[in-house]
Length: 503
Ligand code: NAD
Picture 1 (spheres, protein in one colour):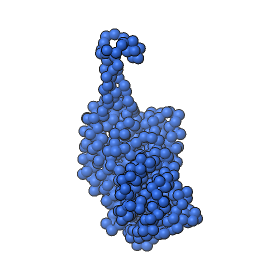
Picture 2 (cartoon, rainbow, N blue to C red):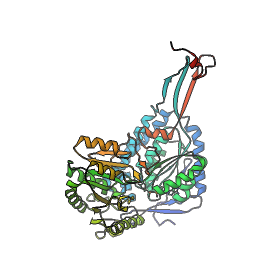
Picture 3 (cartoon, rainbow, N blue to C red):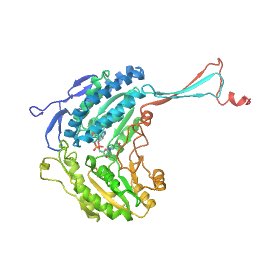
Picture 4 (cartoon, rainbow, N blue to C red):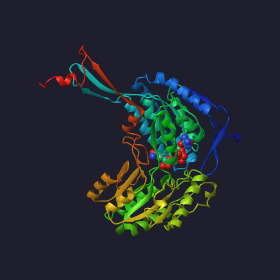
């Protein structure tokens, strides 16, 4: 039941804002204050079936809209994101907790991605290539696939939906969007903007609700050939299994355990800036967060004391406050999980250098705040150096040289982002080649992707697909190879050609 005065939001299905069939609801709250921000439909499988049916019907007309025309709508979407950037950023601070400049950056990423994909409306290049036979023409074209199920996490509530939905739409697919339960308000705003920009009914639908219920139903729906999922490794595996009987195309963007390497020739102060930004920005709740730092023996002690004092200098608070460096974590379960890893680290014998506790006082008790946490002299095999914590905790490790540092960096199951601070071009190039990760930064932290390069990871971070850049188009289209024979006779490839002597 909605609290008095709390706004109730709806699903968007077939161009109509509708309540959940069963009438169930859930609330979204501010992780810094506990305030309720809105009430959302706790949808049922029936709602999901209706959304898929709407998207399936809309696909038959949307796929035939010329791509440059589809793109014109995306340009208008991008403009609306620009106009509403401040308002969206403020709502994001309230619903997700990240500080205002980061929230504005999240919206900016959607602006960049939407403009970029709108530009694709006049490209979507295929290839033409000469035939081995005379009077024959050959080309490849990108074709849309159908209904895309887009399932997203809460940590980039505007950016991540744009990474999936902008390319899906420009390529001619329709979408059913199942956002995270912790950030339904931002997802609602995202869809509102597409409606305002004139997207036809049914082309983008949103169904709020529980991942294990309506999310799983979307994954297992026979009329949804593409699933693009960003979230945890565990759910990614489940999604893969549920989609397997239908041989669906599944795109997974999962967890990370990203390392920053600092060599003895590095600018250590610069590396500290990179570490602090990557480890504690967004309270460490980024898939690309630097939860490991591997420092060369010669700089380790200096780095350790500088990281600790930088971590202790960070101000925790509500992200709307300009003084705040680090906002809350998303919810109580996240806070408990992060703290459990502090206990695990201590039990494993790592040195807790700072943090390691829930932050209280100064109004922090109303929300879910965790002190930036640094462990020292961590063994690379420890759980705190292997498992994704998804909070403001980082593990410092020692390495004797670049080879050992790269070995430690690679010695995990994930492979999303990586970084090296060095002034030695030889070491930089070794790292660029040998770090087994989808992204490598040189002299920058582990976060900071731009939308026109592929984004994604190796090993357990995903399943080989990439988001963003041209790579995204490969997921949202299927190649068709077309042969046009204008010789007026039957020409057999490989056979007639083989019989003809070279001139
Ligand atoms: P999560 O896996 O719990 O949830 C992600 C989404 O999946 C939510 O919308 C949820 O409702 C839905 N879901 C849950 N169970 C489902 C099921 N059985 N079937 C279908 N959908 C289901 O993840 P989270 O806590 O929201 O996000 C944090 C995780 O996301 C971290 O592991 C982080 O590294 C990862 N992440 C990865 C990237 C990347 O690009 N690689 C980016 C951001 C976050």
